[in-house]
Length: 385
Image (tube, rainbow, N blue to C red; front, top):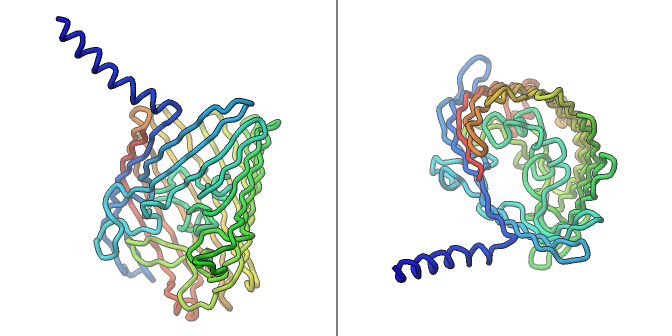
């Protein structure tokens, strides 16, 4: 009997000790698998079609640690690994090669301090431009149905995907419904001492800022970011190119377009109102690249709500791009679907998306773009833990 009691006590100690050692530390993550049927057509002729299985950038694992320091201060640390739920990302594998398929170490990570003044974070931080409206308002984000890159929202590192590395982020406390966020990169050492650090997603002088007001069911914001691209690879021109289902419709500088060294300034406005369980939201982006006569504009409209376990979603978008001479390229987006939430943390979802491109002329075609329509039917499941 004494032996049993002793064994139980030792077992209990082994359980309690790790918990005590992990006080203030939280581990979480997300996993997602999605099956999509896609079809790309041009002038009524099917160019490509098939099915794929994707993670779409949702899978991730993170560790969060907070420590009370006294004086009303809390020390923070956060480290996220973006992990592909359905497999690797290597070209030619036939596995998730979407624009948002993550590299393992591509996630948000920072060390910071928070108190009555707000919070300060240093590291690979979440851009205020991306996380004000943007991905926070897109119910289909990280799925084949999402708005970003498909005609409803700008993608790219300084659009609605990616993080700002080598940066400092300040967020104010809420004051009468107002909240301010500002991120800036002081990085000027580049790679191996070079100031032309083409691999960086934020460099000296790059910034993102947002002002948001929330009250009485309303949410209103304005956001802006600036990116100077010494080597032309850190900033992405919001221009749609249908390149088949493996890559979806991605926004990027076309190869050989001579855009190295340009700067980009983006401004975004948004309004959202909650009618009880139903939310209606609208967002407009003005994307100006240096040397571009006319800006690109992205418009997004979304409606979603809760009906028992169901969350139905309808999203519309429109992009107008006049970057290329003689071309007035238009990209329209529509997505409709629903989530079924079993219990907190687990859901099924499905829906349909169509992205339609018109106005591509002979010069633009030379960059790899074409007029056409991409249609996607998608179903998936997600676990948050």
